[in-house]
Amino acid sequence: MKFIIAVVCTLAASVAPAAGAIFAWDGGGSSGNYSWQTAANWRNDTAPGCSSSGTDNIVINAGNLVTPFNQIADWDLTSGNACAYGTVDVQSNGSYAMTLRKSGTGTFSGGAMSLLGHSASFEAHLDVDESMTADSLKAQGYADIDVASAKTLDINGSFSVDAISGLSTCEKLAAGGMTPDTLYVLGGNSAGEHATFVISDGNVTASAASTPFTSIEAADSVDADATLQFNGTGDTLGVGTLYIRGGNPSTGGLSLFDFNAGTLTNPDGITLSGLSKIDAEHDITVNGELSVTVNGGDGFATEATIDPLDSGAVLSVEKIVIGGGQACKLTIIGGASLSLETDGDNP
Image (cartoon, rainbow, N blue to C red; front, side, top):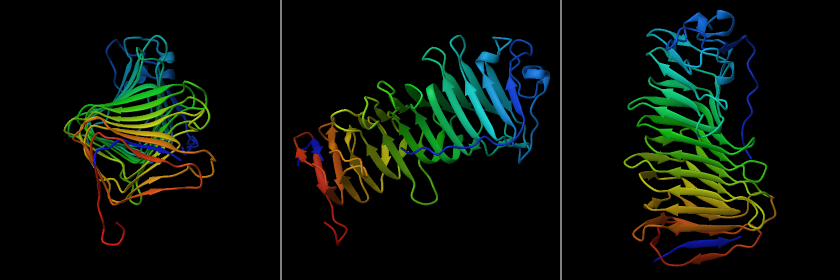
């Protein structure tokens, strides 16, 4: 059956700062000396210590730089070291980009991390040259995450691209893997506060021990979109259950899953609500149901669209469920193939 499907029918955990000292990077060492261990690179010329149960808070802010050449803080952990911190914040400003680079084979575990980029010219960067782990990671403004081939950024909690304080765009680069428990793309509270997460290379998998999920959430009543775009040719994206939660079709933002390349590993289910859309150039197989419904008690209809941009794309689902107490309409228009499968009980 040829199709484009059109249908007419926030969650971000806050993390309290850990108790502990504040260490601020000022890059005051000699030009080109990016070492974490160099005391002169830190305010008051005191480098943070290394403890497997540390609670100190790290601030890497381009606004603090006294040596502008040192815009890279190199977390050069040598083998055998195990470091933890309470929070780690990386911020650029209107003059300089800022980069946190994890190098060396020592381990980092724990910590709530954030990236806050000023603009497309002056981004906040996280470069993972050696594998590392964090408790959570939030990207705001303009940021990118570069995970080296065969390395992993493991997040024992949520990863979010969060536009609540302004437009946010984050790009995942390089061939390494990224494994958050849950993945959020969150539109903001004001018009134009769009959130976009672009996966250009490498594997990304929501991997919670139970019920992993990915949620793309636009604003309910202002033009603040949320987009998850996968361009990773030859790579895989694992979403768990995929929630595409758009705003009020009359006044709210669009939630978009833009599946351009690579392989979407079989999601447990896909739920569309509000003003929501899937653009697909490749086959999608859903191990469960495609649900088109209203978003909780929001009280507005859903207008969802599934657009197979490649005429050979196939959407395979066990069943389609449409409902939720508000206006719902399913339109199939031409474009690709729709396959309804059965699990033996629920065709």
